Amino acid sequence: MPRLECIQCVQFASHSDALVSTHKELDSRTKTALAQATVAAAEQAAVQEPLPVKSTSHLHDLASAAAGLFGWGEGGVTVNANQALVVTQEQLEQIRQLRGVPELEQLQERKNNER
Image (tube, rainbow, N blue to C red; front, side, top):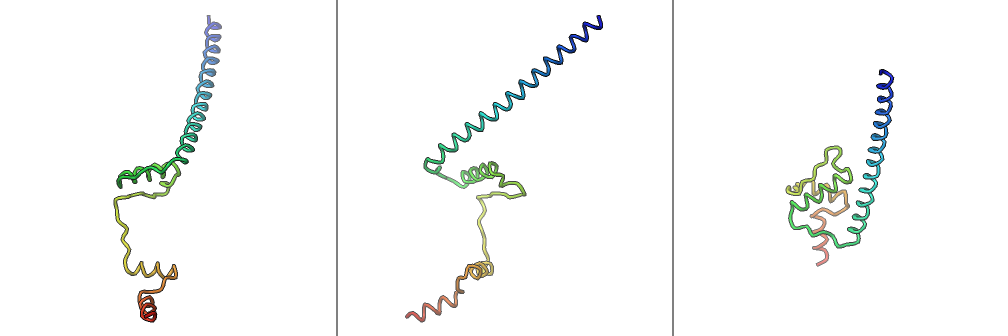
């Protein structure tokens, strides 16, 4: 009788291995099929008109989806469409200097000289 139990164990192990193998194959095929469907949908969307954005919450949803897709959220980047960007006068002057935009006094002088 012990020999019969051993044969059943071997049969069970081979069935188990076959099941694991089948699951791995199905997993791979499912990932491939989903990737192909995603590519087809993205290519179709790329040739259509852009989606209309009707609210800041809609923009937030789109930005969050893109962030998840492209990994933009890694490293603590947060997309928040409900906050306003506030730039101080000092920061604005620094930006103008970096971009080579003349200061307000220089612009006024030029305007006065043109008259």
